Length: 350
Image 1 (cartoon, rainbow, N blue to C red):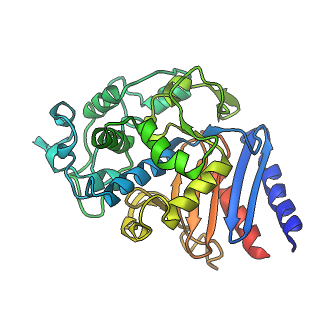
Image 2: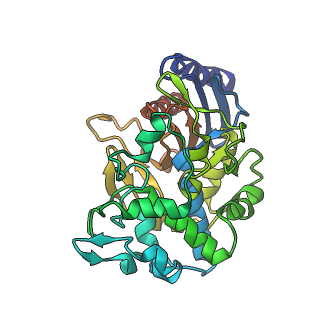
């Protein structure tokens, strides 16, 4: 199969995914060696910016690892070195004992802190922020409000408990604050100075103005989910806007040593179960299908990150494939992974 035929076969996959019921727009980019393809379908175009949601966490990880390379922090550092006592007080009370002083940067990156998730955890009203947003209750919150919300919930385990991990956006809110404390710059400025400008990312930025209508609105089931206030509040845990072209440049740079020493990648691969079939490493995730779903081993494992919006950015070390994209559907983010698998298999077939 020549390059033109290969590109056509990949485009057919995207066109079939847009069904105007679950998926209304899709954008993906894939790279293997000299083959570099960008495709879109439905109401997304190749140059249309979209919310990458929790894929933002890779930006936060990259900045933390850059600061490590500059010897401005160590992953084993206690977060109490960088955060005010007002933040630490009541942050981690487990069975009557305070553990906030024991929390390390590594615990936050690896989701082994035991901290509850301010976003998906139940608030005092019995609803999670996620549930409130999906029901149409868009709202703004500050870092302080996110942490106070987390403090009102119960931690799940002692920090660093063996084989325990709990995915929590609270961890990355705290990492964002640590970055700002160390650099004396905003999280947005750090993204610009350390990632966006050096890599020449033309359509990537931290969403902060809820009147900004540049990114494609999210979808939830069959309707548009307009939550600009929330998207402007996520910051270091989920606030980046980008395009598939930009994120492809970013993910290749992340895993090839342009943003921090490439040998750090091995250090990050310390896996704990979070949600099937995903495992959490230190600032990155592992997507690996179990053998009963992948008996021939035809689908390689991937490392990277994804978001609730159906956005993802992954690298296959075995096949040397970089793949990014979104299906822009909050109700069915799994479709992005199915799309990633289909595109990968088609690419490897010929």
